[in-house]
Image 1: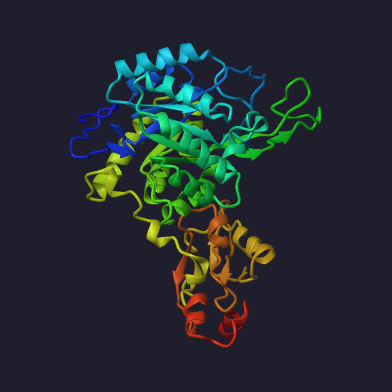
Image 2: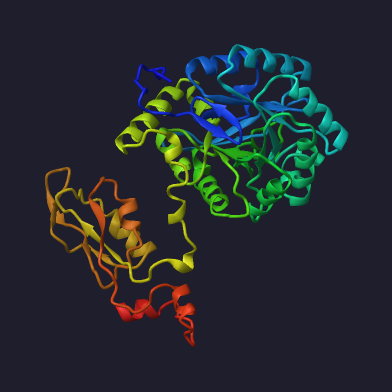
Length: 448
């Protein structure tokens, strides 16, 4: 690698990855979705700088409905969350396989992964995997995640939700696959670790997660029809976009912490900026897949992703993206191990305060009544002054709500003031053989 698409010199930074035997020049892949629907699209993406692409899921051709998408907007932000009821490819298998072969031949250094979903019969899986072998692609991704349409037919999430099925089909695929096999997991489960362990037992080379979340996006208040609407009716669909990132990060970190999984992970779920990408890498992802952001802004976001990640690595005195993978995982812990002595209090910078009183309202009605309006004078936008917020330390429990609602960056900060308590953590108390569990309010009461 020498130069990113925007001209950034990356000679000193190695963004290449090897995810379960699948190599690509950078960790950014297009996820299996509309942006990878055909060869011309994937090829344009590779020209723009994407490291790899997971082809839109192949299977028995189906007929899609219209319309297919709906979104949640928040304020001026469009598509904070995106819902779709689109199924797998509706293009003939012959056409897809031909374009996959041509694309891989034209772009030998980019990762081409083929997403597959067919009826749960061994011979049918063997047939499509063998045909995939002939394309020269770099890997296979088993779609065990689609929550709508296909799951009603016993495929997609219906497979991923049953560890035994997940293991069985993965074993079938591994019997004939000549390339690495990734298993794409559904988040619509109680415990994401169980299907992941099943995939590991079956010999999977890696995991992809998360797929979309089961959802019903909303209802048109004039027609009373859910959206997206198909001739006055709708159905549950798959939810994705920036709004799902916290759920994806939780499930990613859960697998990264599980010693019974131990597989490289392709992280998916709301990645839009290089900062999002770094968070996924730190929590255990080896590679990254992007969908909604591309549907919103186009292939060229790869320029900012590559440049931002390269600059971040350089600022941290790192030379390879591999050095980021999993660095935050040891800091994810069980709640019972958290330090009960650690305490923070809100501090207000009255020179920055604009007197909106949101911190007072939020604390008074939604938290712990720890902020009064009799503090130092603050200047309002009309030039007048009035008393600003005052934090009562003995009532403040350090919940952070005031700093979260404050519209002025840096106006409210949380300062560490440790508690005078003998408790270490709930689990430490149990290890010391205490006769009684600490009452939920005991430390609070002593502190007050």
